[in-house]
Image (cartoon, rainbow, N blue to C red):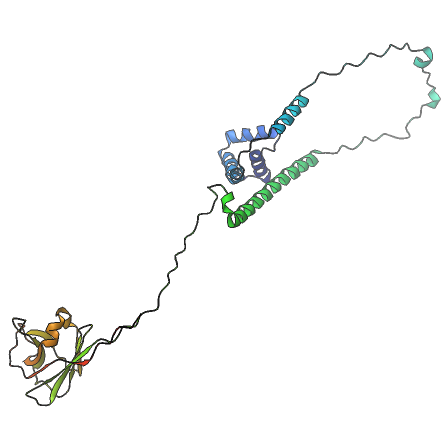
Length: 307
């Protein structure tokens, strides 16, 4: 149902308590038969409830109570005053007998027009609407001022607000990142894989920190249908361990040494065998090593920086 501005103002003033007895009875009658109007009244109660939360209970002082009692006693109905009776006056014949001369009575020159009737109902209605909307405007101004006051107090003195209106403290976590500490260069190991002291066929490089190795092909080439495979041979292992097939490109990089400890890596012999295309099918070498060599430390590890 669509309500007029008068209905909305009536609902607001009913909540404020500024209506007279007749208007309150009108609102309560509408609430008893119209659920939508009742919901609108409850909505105004919810909006204006913030003002009640801002005002705490205050006990009046003793002198205030005395003034209230005095005002109540003065406002009680009093008996009507008894006036003294005036003495009876006997009218004289000169005062009661009035002789009217017909010649002195003036007849109207023409027909007498009746006074115009003015409809003042609209004026009364406009006055009531003006008063009602003035009350609503005052109420909205009070709500706006209260909200501004709540925001200002919440910013500067939040302890003065009730618990339900007090803003929750915000915790801001600031992460301070320290500058990264440069990692010192790790040790580098190099092995020249060759056959019987001849020309180098491969150069094997191992990073001491990551244990990643790089094989660079220099002067070796596999026959068609064959592949070179790299092996790690150590007396601490029961048999040679395959490190994978050496690729056809110039460089082959593998991280497989990460599963071995540093002592085995540094003291092992690295050998290359010729296998079928794709490498050994069973994890065992199928030819004698054609190239071999041992690691030597080419770059020592850097000392950690002093702190």
